[in-house]
Length: 377
Image 1 (cartoon, rainbow, N blue to C red):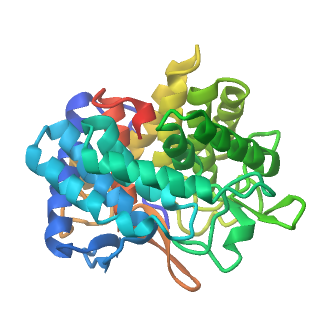
Image 2 (cartoon, helix red, strand yellow):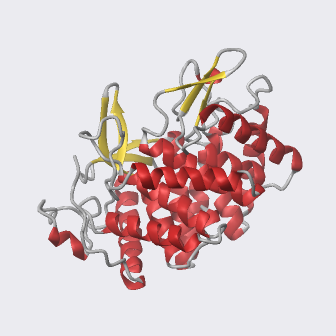
């Protein structure tokens, strides 16, 4: 399913972007009222029928990240206390067997340390780094996906692209060379197994005892390619070349393989769902790349075009451009970004609203308006 986006090439102006941010902030209040003390996971379409979790799975850190980001923009002590309270509730994820812990603690804890020097966030970041380091597998020369938080029973023999960027940022956040070395080794291992010369990336690889064997068609899964782009932009910011070249090539592959601003979830199934959330993550990677290359303005403009397409599409409710679209969404609450392709059943994927999609969209808008730096998310 693809909803049309505006064909008007005019980019969102700062006032429009701030309006979209405010809609997303207001939406957070509605989600909070709906889910109370549980972690919101996802809501099918724009239905406001939230699936919740007491622990948050791998998504829980993004709910905290939404509030860390909101409190940075609003400078509200109340918002900051909410973010800190969510952070404390993530502690149960420290001991879970999962490389996706980096998603939980970079977004849910480290942003609180980075932006506010929050003592609880600092402590949780420190122990989460130690836990992640303890999971390093010297035979694989990387940190495996693990069996929990979206992993599988074979997860300790797999590496995934999903946690690539958060793993680099979390391990490098404490400035210890030993942790940075592990992040770099994991990055080099992932590049050797996942990367294709045209910039396309595999999303998963299986360890056979000697080598990592990638699975699937490289570059086909849009969010997997976007995760690779985001991770490479973080590697480039941390270590420079050759990672800057890898990041540029991956972003060029995205642009050439996905000429539509709202591309399909999978290139090998173009008639199925699209995944606007992948476009948001890709845009954040391009905004980071824009700060690192001499021709960076082209990447900033392209990211701006992609975010404009999303905000003016039917996948984001309540914005003034919604009236141009054929599907009537007048009954939907404003500020819903229901453009996250998500597996909601054994053999079922659907578009949902999710707090990780909300966070990345807010972050991209905040980068474009200059509220935060691209490398901070």
